[in-house]
Amino acid sequence: MEEPQNGDGGSATVESDLEPIIGPGPAPRARPKRPLQFEQAYLDSLPSANMYEKSYMHRDVVTHVAVSTADFFMTGSVDGHLKFWKKKAVGIEFAKHFKSHLGAIEGLAVSMDGLLCCTISNDHSVKIYDGDVKAKLAVSDRNSSFVHIYDARAGSNEAIASREIHLVPVKVMKYNHIFDTVISADIKGIIEYWNPATLQFPENGVNFKLKSDTNLFEIVKCKTSVSAIEVSPDGKQFLITSPDRRIRVFWFRTGKLRRVYDESLEVAQDLQRSDAPLYRLDAIDFGRRMAIEKEIEKTENAPQPNAIFDESSNFVIYATLLGIKVVNLHTNKVSRILGKVENNDRFLRIALYQGDRSSKKKHRIYLFSRREPEEPEDATKGRDVFNEKPPPDELLAVSDIGKSVTTSLPDNVILHTTLGDIHMRLYPEECPKTVENFTTHCRNGYYDNLIFHRVIKGFMIQTGDPLGDGTGGQSIWGREFEDEFHKSLRHDRPFTISMANAGPNTNGSQFFITTVATPWLDNKHTVFGRVVKGMDVVQAIEKVKTDKADKPYQDVKILNTTKKVPASGVLCYLHKWKAYRRDSEKN
Image 1: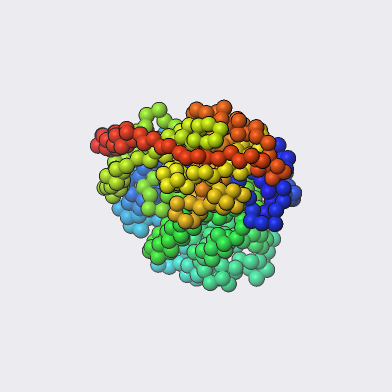
Image 2: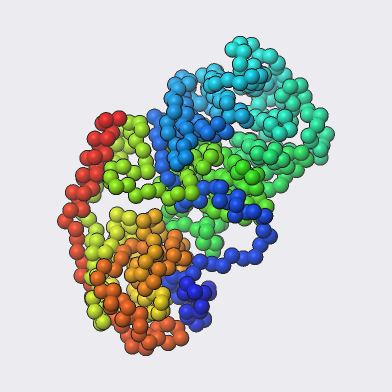
């Protein structure tokens, strides 16, 4: 493992054949790769925030979401309700609410011009919202192989055309408006192309006559089915998501397979065991996410994840147990992962405007943007908007949490060192696990007589290793624990207190105090405190003479620590809960 370096890129330590030194380092340099022209311009138009900005409620679990080019997006839930939301310059606003069906919404589609929306339900009804001239609606029959074409504007229940496109019932259909062709798949996984006017194989726009010359039998060969079809905005590609957790991208005109992305649980487990930091999670967090995935597989009629293209047709976006992946089709690389830190939510259905999400067993839609969530002045108002009355189980869960909080973690610690005292302000609300680990070590005397084993002038001072060489130390749980990143806690100033690690989710006991702003460490090391007094002591430690391994020639030690527990911690939490309850009763 390469030794960590300071922010200027200069070597801060020497190579060692022993265990890797734990500590902060710079952002890794990008490896040379085949570039996509204007890649950054495309990425700049996609969501990039690590956390969702806002969420809004439905009365039941959200199962469908779609975006209209007319600056609206629609969300449907399992109770048959449909909501329209208007996109504003910043954020969204509620527009309309329909009790569309008696049963669950099973399909939600929007016309390419954005003026027509329809829903279909297991109550055997189709509802159409707004209208347009010659608006054709294709509906498949659950009990036969017929596809019926209706004039949505005529108001008649009689089909204007019907035909058996497949030999068995059709499961999924998607219209490619660029080539005026419908792509459909039946329950056996057979894929067909057909013209909506003639209901026959298209005469133009495709470069094959026989499906044996294509890869359209791929779904059948893999003994799976089609969950969803999505067509790229330029019409040249389409993708298929399947219950086998693979996303298959096809060239439309040739029917050839372009890419296959395997998001199966076996692959997720292999990545967890690998050394790839982008895909690794804390062991406990990964185990919990795997349990959710298995629960989804066992749940009958659970919403199936979908995948979408961005407006440039160069990126595919889909939700996984790790988060929402943005994959560059040109380089075949993951460009970014959205919502990885949102470990309480499993996002499933995706539609792209700036980004709106639905989550497993959640009555909410989640908006991802290029903005991180704001810190509200009123503690009772956050990014999760209570536009509906919370369900009883959610109220009960919050009530249980309120009852369980009977103690508070210390929010102030003093390090008594051989060069003076360092007063620290901690953030137990933002990083409870990290603060619990640190303050428990302080209470148990773990840090007493430990040296500052790594000191780099103009960068940071590091301690917390009982071995004194940067390779030791463990958490109070006897294992590594996960990172806790918070948008308000950044390495944006000197005298920031942060956890040292050997990679994502490898926190133990070592920590460091910066002496300059170190923004390249954001989202790599957990910030859990700030120095509020004794900055001169930190600077004095920073200036001691060190060897080539950045270890001081003369030991600087932590003699012991002193902790302070806030008396108002429980009262503040109860106040938040009471305010939350009042808002709920108003709704």
